[in-house]
Length: 86
Image (cartoon, rainbow, N blue to C red; front, top):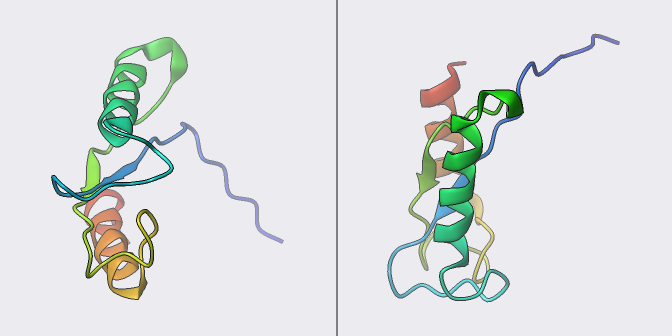
């Protein structure tokens, strides 16, 4: 079996449009998580890559209040390929 090594952790967050509540994250949770990920990436000792926020997911791209459905997965996957390449 081939082994894959990810040299640096990647922090990625899918943001949602204003007014789309993510019940598990609470009010302002996704934005706070995004700010913390950006902060972690500025600390070279943590060795974190921040590729930016992906999304914006909304009612037509989520299966519930948080998780991407097939259309959302396609959107996020295309954005990941755009950042990391194929």
